[in-house]
Length: 128
Image (cartoon, rainbow, N blue to C red; front, side, top):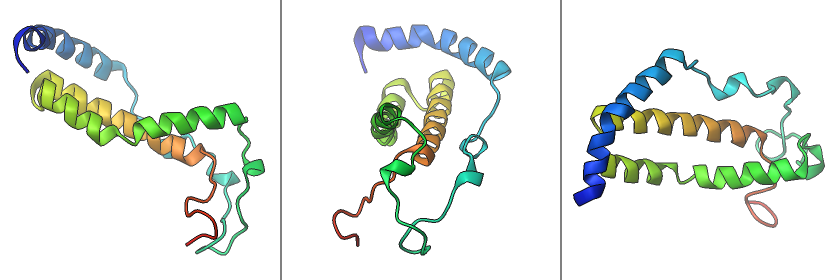
């Protein structure tokens, strides 16, 4: 990155470091498994010989299911986002620390959304 954009990123780095430190001082670490009501789970068909899944089994309104799916689609590109940001901002220093923390947080969001998303078959008609 060259010119004004590179200069802007360099000029912002002290603020990034200060704000990241402030965030880390108050942020509580969390993990997706802490927010999924696993006690309501059951085994579905195929390798676990459970019952087949149907959309009616979801407790989430259809609009919420759609939002989760769209968010999950964007989070599936997380490795690409991480690469682009790390390449442009740098992997070291305050920008590097920020991009690594941001990527980990977004991955946790994706894990949580996967636990709640609708589960139609991804195998297509007839299954594998």
